[in-house]
View 1 (cartoon, rainbow, N blue to C red):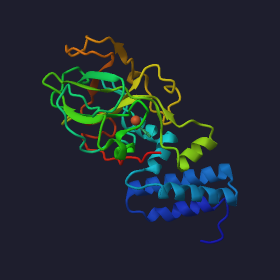
View 2 (tube, protein in one colour; view 1 turned 90 degrees about the vertical axis):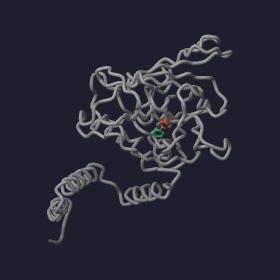
View 3 (tube, rainbow, N blue to C red; view 1 turned 135 degrees about the vertical axis):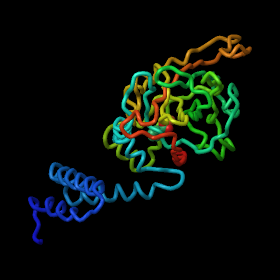
View 4 (cartoon, protein in one colour; view 1 turned 30 degrees about the vertical axis):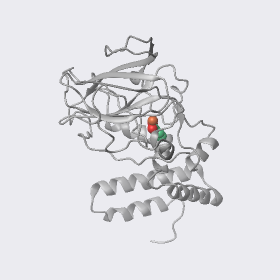
Length: 307
Ligand code: BEZ
Ligand code: FE
């Protein structure tokens, strides 16, 4: 087969894929070729635009290392990460909605006792968080692992300022108590721009988009026999709730962080400062209840360098 033209090249490539022995590889490769060729036919790139595209992807790859994952940012900002999330985690009554993991999760964060402060001395408005983990029918799950992480009042994560702050902060993991409950103190997070000093930032600018995410606290919750939940709770009233750069906001994940007066700590202890209070009750699906469920696997992501 030779002399391919615009009308014959797609079928020629598809035919060559028939020798793939793995059916899923064949299916994915065929769809990739069909959609990619359709994209090129629709856009009709000039040779220069094609070269720009190759250079953009090359620079995206070069930006990736153990501290930065530009391809995941690309997936996030093009809505692909949330599309994958929607396909793999359907909504279910009683189950908390999931959203993107983001690049700031750290494996093996310090394990803390319930009720302790995880801010590690970082400045900010005090925040007290309580919550519970249960099945979709409301049965408490004791001993569930809860990982939390969030930004500081300037929108920076600990891993973006490790040299200045000298260690991990505003992140921890703990286990729910006998009633499936948990609590911790920290500081109120702020909205922040995703790292935008690379090709993804260049793309957002060219597309006339801002790089901001609304303020949120990340949660990753797992319990044996249940689907791992990766989600955030967003601060109600944030100006970026309707324009999150990674399309991660769901109404059920938005909550008021209520400002409370000194002396009325929700845990019954005395406080002498005003503090914000958040309560959220999480529901986990049993493993296998979603189309493609992930049972308490540990997801590893790499911290992103400060921009
Ligand atoms: C985050 O929430 O940490 C995040 C998610 C997607 C891209 C960048 C950051
Ligand atoms: Fe985040």
